[in-house]
Image (spheres, rainbow, N blue to C red):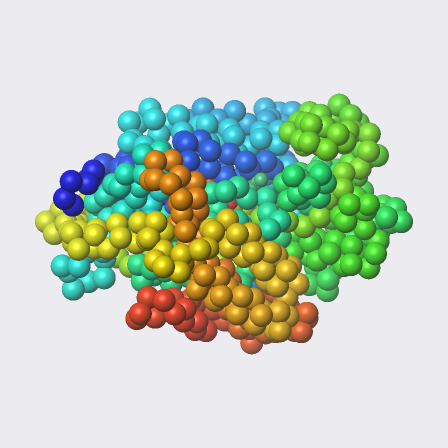
Length: 604
Ligand code: FAD
C-alpha cells in the first residue's frame, strides 16, 4: 500500500485482553506467525480489571461439582438462550485452561489442602471461582502477557484498528487484513493476514454509568458488522447489581460480586434484607427462603439452598432498581451492601483487599466497619459476533471473534466468573483454528486491494474534513449518546422509550457526519474519539433495535411492557447485519440451535 507501513502475518489478533492473548499463544504454538494489535498498552485491557475469579468445575471445594453442573448453571443463568454447544465446551474445558495457567506461572489462592481455592458466586451451585484475592484478572493477564512476550509474539501497542480489509480478488467472502493507526503519531499501518481474530471486548462506553473503561467502544462488534459478519443477541446487556454510586467521579466503578459470595448482604434504607422478596419462580427451588437457611449455606451447600443475594445478576440488579424506585434507597441513590456486620475485618482485608482500598481511598468508607452504597452499572454485553461454536469463525472466512466481542456463549445473562473462563477456552480454540486455516491458504493467500486501503485511509481522515457544515464536537455527541442509552435503553425498557432512542441515535449519526476535529494527527484524542464514536453509534443502534424487537423480559433484557419471559421468544435469537449499502441495520429472527437429547436431560 504505497508508502504505508505494512506487515505480513498468518494470524493477526486485535485485542490484548485474556481472549486475544490466549488466542495468540495458541496460534503461535500451532506454528503461525502471529501479531497482537491493541489500542492501549499491553496489560491494560479489561481483563486486568477482573476481580472475582475464573469459573471452572475443578471440584476442589465440592467434589460434587463437575462440568455437567457447570453447564446446567450456565444455561439456566442465560435463561436457556446460550448456544448449548458453547456452554458445553466451556464447562468441559475450563478446568484444563485454569490448570494450564498455573503451569505457566499463575499463583492462585489455595485451599487448606493446597489445591486451587474456589469461591462462591451468583448462579453457580458450588464454590467454583479460581481466584487470587479480588485481583484475579491481574494475575491472569500477567501470566498470559509474560508467556506472549517469552514466545516472541509481536505486539503492536497503542495501535487502533479502524477497518478490516477483504480479499476482493476471490469469489469467496474472506478477510485479508486490517487497517490501523498509531495513536501517538497518527500514522497508518496495514496488516496483511489470512486470519484475523477479533478480541476487542465490550461496548460499555455507550452507557453513562458503567464499570468499563474508555477502551470499550464496541470496535470489534462494528468492525465485524462492516466486514459482513452478523451480531447475535445484542439486546442483552448486563447491568451489574453493584457499582459504586458515590462520589460522582467514580459512579459505576465495580464492586465485585465476591463481596456477596463471601457473605455480604443487601439492605434497604429501612435495614431490611430485601432480596427474599424478589426470588423469581424460576429459581425458587434452589434459593433459600429464610435468613437461617441462607446463612447456613456458606458452610453446608448440600443441605441448604443458596442466599437470594446470589441469584444471577439480572435478578439482583432488577431488585435493587425496584427498591431504589420505591424510595427505599440509600442517601446517594443506591442501596446498602453490608459485609462489615457479617465478617471480621481480617477476613475482609484478606479476601477483598482491592475493595477495601477502593472504598477507603475513593469514598472514605471503611468497609470493615460500615456498609457500602451501591447501585446497578452497565458491565458486560452478552451479545456479539455470531460464531461457529467449535472454531469461533464468523460468517466471513478467516475472521474469528472471541471473548466479550463474541456472542452466543452466555445467552441472555452471563454468570460471574464465566467470562474469564470463556476467554481461555475459546481464545485457545480460535487461535488454533485461525492458525490451521492460515496454513491452508499457503497457495492462495488473500490479497489486500490498494483501493480498499485508500478507502480506509479516507474514512479515517474524514473527521478532519467535516465539510462546510462541520460544527459538531465528538465529546458532546458521545455524552449525549451515553445519556440516551442510560435513560432509554437501560435496565428497564419500554417500546415508546426504545423508539425514542432510535430517533435520537439517528440524529446523533447525522450530526456525526459533520464533526469538527481540531489539530493534527499526532496524539489527538478528539480524533480518536471521533473514530470510536462511529462504532459506538452503530452498536447502540443494534442494541436499541434488538431491544425493541424482543417483546419479552429475559436475562439482561427487561421490558416493562412485556414483563415475563415468553416461550415463543425463548426459542429465537435476533441476528443483526448490515444491508447492501453498508449503512442500514437489518434484523432477523433465527431459531435456536437444537440441543441434543442427552444434554436436555439435565433440565428435565
Ligand atoms: P479485554 O480484556 O477488554 O481486551 C480488549 C482488548 O482489545 C484491549 O487490549 C483493547 O486495547 C483492544 N482493542 C479494543 N478495540 C480495539 C481496536 N479498535 N484496535 C486495537 N485494539 C483494540 N469476568 C469474570 O469472569 N470474572 C470476574 O471476576 C470479572 N470481573 C470484572 C471486573 C470489572 C471491573 C470488569 C470491567 C469486568 C469484569 N469481568 C469479569 C468481565 C471480564 O473481565 C471481561 O469480560 C473480559 O476481561 C473481556 O476480555 P476480552 O479479552 O474480551 O477483552
